Length: 148
Image: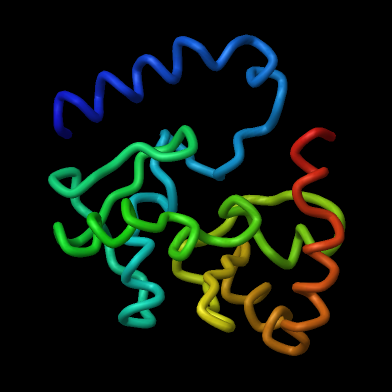
């Protein structure tokens, strides 16, 4: 990671303050890795889950995001909201039900150029039955669930 980027990230963490410690993390990131280390850009550009590399990583929203190429990392840095999963990377179906749950980066859907993750392939099958309805439900609950 570039030295300048690391300094900015360290300074931001120092000034975050204790109020943020009481909230659930915005992005579900076990071990600090968003998408369990998968490349967020690959979902939208290649319609598949691809592991990223520590050589192409960036810190954003309190998580480390890894990418399979420098091109993907640069695209994410230019517009992270375009590639980041909806609902903080939590299971979109669970958010539609008013709760948060972890997500499996292999159980995903891209709808209208947005990435949605679900808890498992079985939940992904449920999600596929009515994605528009589940998105409407999730939108109604998000991001207030982070404060519960």
